[in-house]
Image 1 (tube, one colour):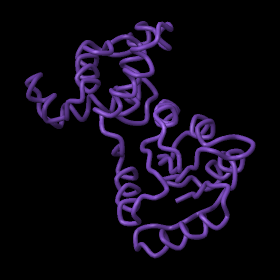
Image 2 (tube, rainbow, N blue to C red):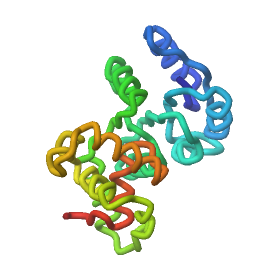
Image 3 (cartoon, one colour):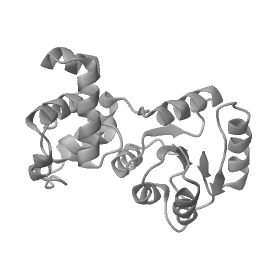
Length: 212
């Protein structure tokens, strides 16, 4: 674990909580986004707990610049624009700082497994609010989907519609293991971290339309 927050006292409390868990170790702390980027490269943590508002470089920009570790945003600000920006930057989850300790630990474990802490339905709501209601051009183009096979494109569309691996398998008459393989290749080809980013990508390139 890497802790990133500009409040020293909060970091100390989080470190105490995490180091009391048998399956967690804190490999470093950072008080701003610049230090977080450097420490992430040096320590290669599995999960980073990242604050949003910090000096120098904020948590969302730091998330965008860090590759490899899973990032869980922890903030006091329950605002849609922060959630959407964090997920688009590559965060795997978003929790408020008043989250119960047990829930925080569960979220960290889930993110470490590769799961996302924001449900696809919530992601879709955020996307439709930020993309569907604006008249701005889509941030991505459909041409970016050309790296995918037709089957992978089908799977991606169903991911974007909030379908689970089991549901996708039933819909496409595939085994669940085959679907998992397709999902893994989709994320790799598109340079995405998880299913939440896959949902965002699908809307931003027009594969799925807001309100559909």
